[in-house]
Length: 306
Ligand code: PMP
Image 1 (spheres, rainbow, N blue to C red):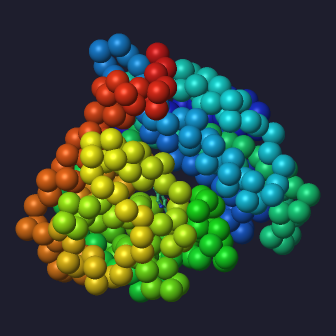
Image 2 (cartoon, rainbow, N blue to C red):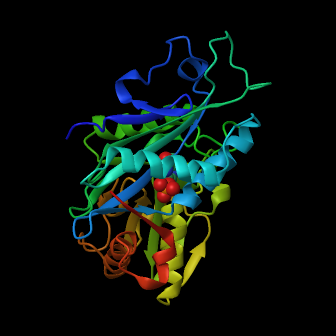
């Protein structure tokens, strides 16, 4: 599918092909940027897009900006308005993915965040699956360690961090796996290259705490809320690599992958090699939620007529 025609760039909506920066741009050279990833689900019946947790995504975006400590010209409310304007302008008739980007746009030599005002851009693309959600993923534990919070803050979404993700993902793909799981520097299970991880043991849903160098995932929070509301016990605690192998069920969460179940890790089959009961239940509830079909979570969905 073709890219959408318009982007927001340098303070206004413009043609995507005109939204270009110099090769000297600091963010390109040093990864000095913050980004987000947001999904909008198309509803043919009333020609609308339901954007999932729009405000929460921009809150996390501004938290990452706050960690950089740079000036930034927009509030959450203003970002939400820009987002809706661009969505209406592109008028998609398919599921869409939005990529806000705050970046050091100057061309000065040297990585430097001091006395900088970040630039802002937003583009969108058509997107269905990022990773398969039906077939069961085959994962490997990466030999690369997840970047630690005291190196590049792992709770936020910084461009430079994704060199770490890219190395892990390459290693996994080169070895025939769908995705990598990264351990933290001190050896605890952290997360996937762009996904949070959950395991189920004896009916309890377990996920690593944010302090194990985990990105503050919006889907992670969503799944924790949904699970709690349907009476599943949820525990945030550290997980060893070997505990992955003996889990009853494992799944990944993320805006891109949504809720994707795991078939094997390091060639050990998880459970009976089929989607587990709780993973299946949470996956169904998640899809109903993001499509705006669950009344109690309707405040998470921003419906925009296109
Ligand atoms: N971890 C990493 C490293 C990610 O890039 C992402 C995707 N943003 C996630 C987890 C999942 O976060 P979210 O649910 O907010 O998309």
